[in-house]
Length: 156
Image 1 (cartoon, helix red, strand yellow):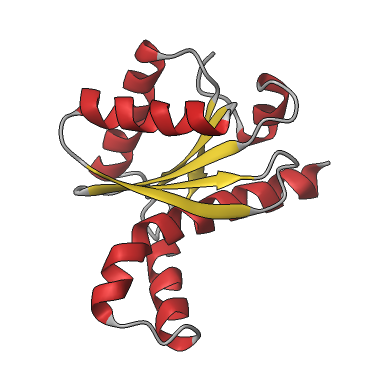
Image 2: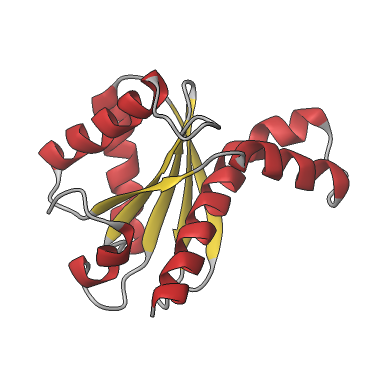
């Protein structure tokens, strides 16, 4: 497969397979997974970044365990709508992943996802700073994936 438009992603996947959502950070990769109906995203795991090959192997193993059919990767677009070096790095991760496995990948604007998740964890869950550090990246991945799923539902 290849990088596809988000709205083309369900058609590029095997039927009734979940999507995986990624929040690619410098030190960690937050991973979330959807249900097979592509309705709800849930935080799944946190991968501590090492080298690309190890990161990709860990991700692909998680995907195989869930039977995932595609990936939504959060794209850190600047607030003014431009793409900077972090976007280039995220897009390169997607391209490199395609060299290892043929699967559909789409990107989704992740602006403010980590900030929104932190605010939710502080305000609603009254979570300590230490606990937030443990969960924010995978929760941000779920936030990113949920946004993409809602966009997919709106397009049906």
